[in-house]
Length: 77
Picture 1 (cartoon, rainbow, N blue to C red):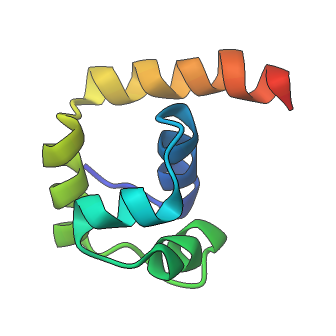
Picture 2 (cartoon, helix red, strand yellow):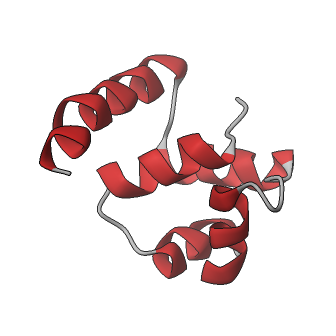
Picture 3 (cartoon, helix red, strand yellow):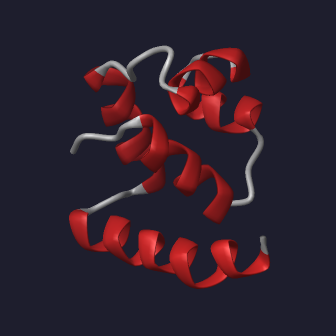
């Protein structure tokens, strides 16, 4: 499953997690998460796979989480 910077940020916001905490799930720093979210770096597939395992993501679950983001996070901004 491909996870780009935008998706990573949305997931992190839905889980109400810090960059450091999300980074720990992939064994990277919060700064690296920031680089990925801003588009300065790409998330290596093996790191994305780590996140998928840790969050038990499936395509359906990812779609539901993105819908939650659209329904709740955007409306509160």
